[in-house]
Length: 208
Ligand code: GLN
Image (tube, rainbow, N blue to C red; front, side):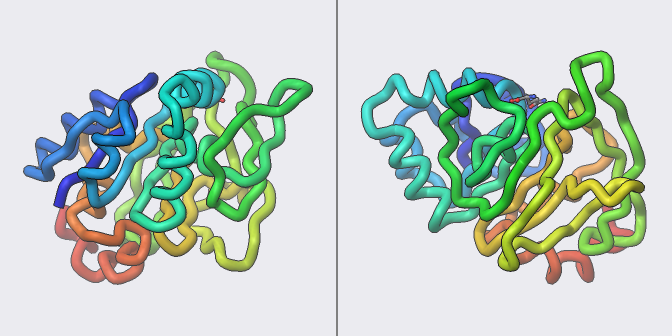
């Protein structure tokens, strides 16, 4: 099992470190050739507009990413969730490029600017009873979704902050920044990250 972490911009290093801590092999992805080698992909947090611009520099890379996220396990965190969204709110006038695949509308910077960043304890029943600490940094929220998208975590006012759809998993927050909980990255040990979320709750409950 080899996991790729899109490494054009943002918090890719933290994801790789966390995967390596769990003895999961991970490589940074910057080219189509590297993307071909991996079984699953993490698109990290950062800045989705910059990510789109940088991925557009290598010919065909955006299309290769689109192809990948429609077929293979792909997990988007924060800006990664924005990059996977089919529909966006909070972009500049002419919109911004995404790779899409996630049948949802995602609102960028939903809580405000950097100073409105926060941490909270989140209930994620599919990952066990113990709440998970979640770090939100200029975070997006899913404000509308198609039937194939299953919600896995919401905040107190019902904002959708984690969801899955077939091979895709998205989290509005940054699990790579919470050292004390490895449950999200543990999912990457399995070939189909999103498919196994439900199944894993049995194994992970109380274990990590
Ligand atoms: N607000 C950023 C964006 O629009 C995402 C922030 C993050 O990834 N922490 O891309």
